[in-house]
Length: 342
Image (cartoon, rainbow, N blue to C red; front, top):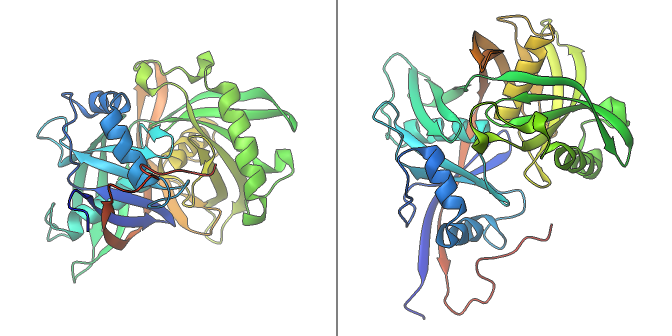
């Protein structure tokens, strides 16, 4: 047996069906005083890029894999920092990952559960400081997590985009990353597994059509510029309680399809629906995914970002551990760091 094998330890979760691979102790130092700076450094490091690909790509991962490297927070005000990654690189925000991290932090004792049953886990991400408010029952089991995101806001309404399906109309909003939002019915689709390939295709078209436009430029931090994904949504009217009910499929990076209702994407939807008067302050958005998982979302306050009215969104969901892994790399393996087929 070869002696010089690399090893990598991970803890895997899923939030609403979307994977999140946690790397508690990355085997490298990442320069930078803040998480946003470390993201830029990681993007420029061949060593770190290799490990990202190794843990994300096949045969250890797949084209829709997601995960994060745990890093130091910006200061002592947070419990941890994280660099989120997917098959195409490092993202600025990740709501489903934040829900998984809050669950992991309490379940492992990294952040001791409060006797009240509500424990705030503060996490520094590239777009700012977020909170995973973890709810536990009398036995200490995690039963839900409230993801409290950075300020989110509508950027533009009814933006025309030329696509292979003709001109489509989208809204743009920021929810930790910039998202375009397209009504599925306007292009003859429903948010259902049988339309997944078509949703991915139109989502990619819209993203790349707008990614370099002025509308996709962040007003304060250019590192947050660019369209991260396209939310293809379906309006389902009101549920039995009278709450606004929608279903969505978020196509992010370059063609990854979120299995969850998408945490930061849900925040972008909350910002849009609030700004257009469809979601009142304190009202709930019931937000389902393409696989039937569900987040509940609302606003917990208002603010401004660069003169724009913004909301402080909260998204509630659950995450569950799926396993722990000790990945190895045989030095004879010619398929390192791996591959993806799309």
